[in-house]
Image (tube, rainbow, N blue to C red):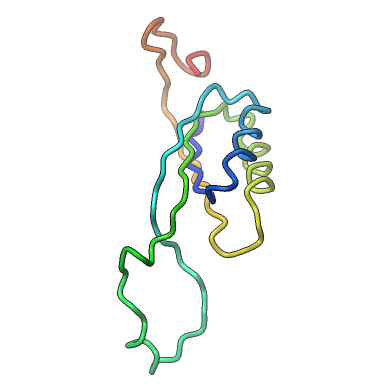
Length: 116
């Protein structure tokens, strides 16, 4: 099993949720987050002092979607999420794929993928 930590633009939530539902993701959570990434740009050494310090107004509002899925669907799911979330502009987001050792449904104590 893999955990998908997906950072997307707010306006892309419906499209990403549609992909998750189409692949029968058993569940997911959505959180409002703020953060910053890195943008590659040319900076002259003389301009380094002009770069502003990180201030709250420099943080971008995003959504974090978290789900756990079987290994067999990860590649297809990631490809479709990238297509659904893309605008071809800086700040489209990121997907982190993390191993999930186990899942346990508390009520029945089922484990592994059946607990999803």
